[in-house]
Image 1 (tube, rainbow, N blue to C red):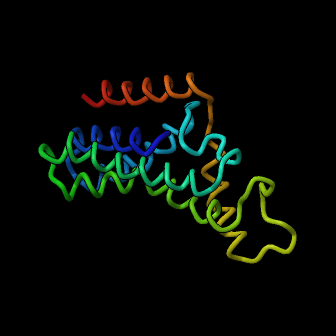
Image 2 (image 1 turned 60 degrees about the horizontal axis):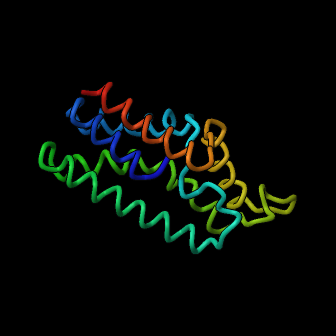
Length: 157
């Protein structure tokens, strides 16, 4: 899912569960539930484009996620709580970033036999949550993402 989709669900969670700590735990968990639904995001097909392009798309999406979260929810729940819950919802993707930035590339899908501890650790952090990650191509992957956010919004209202 895009960072924006995760932030929208995190905000809905916070409006329903107003304790920032509890809402952060729920938002963190929702990330994995949402990612298990086939979806498109800016990481889909990343091996077909330069890493810098994927990085700029991810940064833009993250900035959009925080902007949308602040616009829609900060007036209702406060800036600090929505910031904390949005961070919690996005942390799983951020934990995968070192593998992408420092080690993975178009032809490298896992650490080689001479990989060091940092590469193996980064890969493990990347790989474990990705056991549940399901990708889909456009336009279906965008539709399922919109439907997932709508489902959570309806559920949490």
